[in-house]
Image 1 (spheres, rainbow, N blue to C red):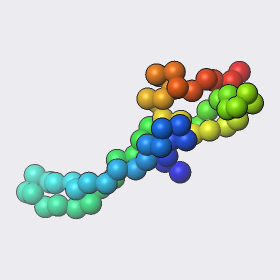
Image 2 (image 1 turned 60 degrees about the horizontal axis):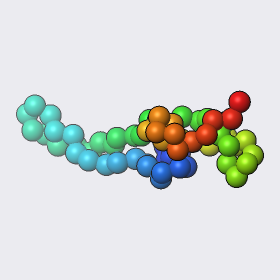
Image 3 (image 1 turned 45 degrees about the horizontal axis):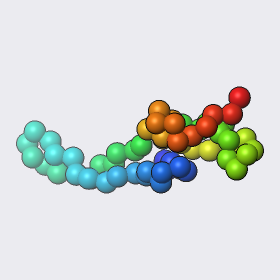
Image 4 (image 1 turned 90 degrees about the vertical axis):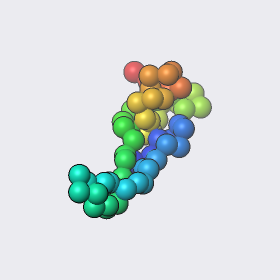
Length: 62
């Protein structure tokens, strides 16, 4: 679910390294909001990341 419908940004994987240098897997999730946006002229609920909301790639529906 953590995926932006506009730009396709999704979960990123990496390795968490502790102070004693023990390594374990971790994830970074994008900041995705469920918003009502205009898609093809009709209002629709989509998941959009905050980067797309700020940059104006998403037209909000009222």
